[in-house]
Length: 88
Image (tube, rainbow, N blue to C red; front, side, top):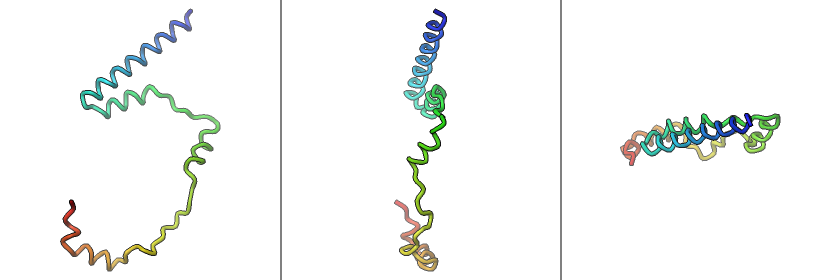
């Protein structure tokens, strides 16, 4: 019986936080709404979390191919023109 009461209390607190986050988002306070929602979530860290993340983001070559990159002189020349200063 005590476990059932605790479960209802937890559900009620989650519903309150959800309602608060929705109210904050409607009023335009998206940062605070995000903080409220994320504070409910528990981090999912287990023995295989690091392995799963490494599978999702495999490490490739970190060598930057500069074959088509402009030279320093070409960049300086480009910056001298007015078109470079007019950002649209």
